[in-house]
Length: 324
Image 1 (cartoon, helix red, strand yellow):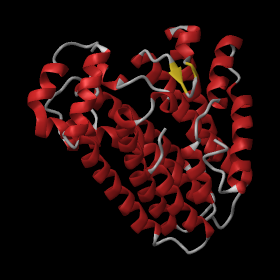
Image 2 (cartoon, rainbow, N blue to C red; image 1 turned 45 degrees about the vertical axis):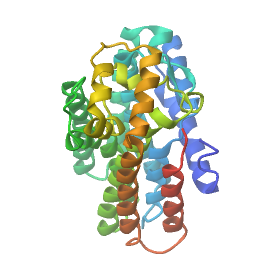
Image 3 (cartoon, rainbow, N blue to C red; image 1 turned 45 degrees about the horizontal axis):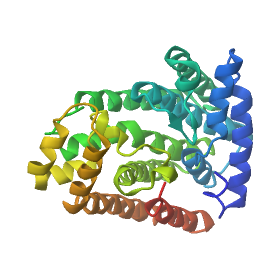
Image 4 (cartoon, one colour; image 1 turned 120 degrees about the horizontal axis):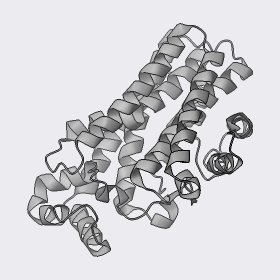
């Protein structure tokens, strides 16, 4: 977290305080489960959503630090709850460089822990809300996240999944929480309504591009840096944008590998990676990510001039060039 936000000292202070608050507020009844969850909070996560929340809060006309703390906590708790549940579904061993909750405590306890965090996220929303629309927005965002997961489940192992279907999935799974973070950062600080709406648009574009870059890194990244096994999603039947583009141009080579079964050998995964790269799957996915970043930049240009606007531009560049 500290390294990612090194350019803005005030933001590092906010996020450090938020991390301490989360460690205290989580307070699960089981000591072992609680330690597993708080270790995730202390792990090498970047707090991107909370960071964006606080960046957009700088456009506020009436900033209440306590309200903002609760608002940022609601975003991070919701995100953390979905990660814990994802790790159960995907049978993941590591998250943020540490063992996942279900590896340390079993699936049942991990599911309960995720559910518990959902309740905390809504509690923080209730505390921070200006009116009932903030609670409704949190509810709508949660519904979108779950719809994204269900859309993805329906498309598992689907060799005919379209790019539009993929974008619909990541709109729910990833982009809506970025949009929520940016919008609520501005809104809870009582920014002008035009800025609140712009923040939501910018957050959505950033979230979509962030997920696409994540999917690109599955093929081009160093697993030591990304803390993810090689092409883990492929074995779960999750076909991301680089693979979908490669299937359009090189189905003949890819289909025999993808139809082998649910647990591909490492050799098959490495061959698949090579085929996706040579079929321009990564470069075409990168083009889509760049277009989304360009759209975010156009919207950022409409924000008031100043340090925050300049840093948002730098942040987009950093996200685009990240390697983990």
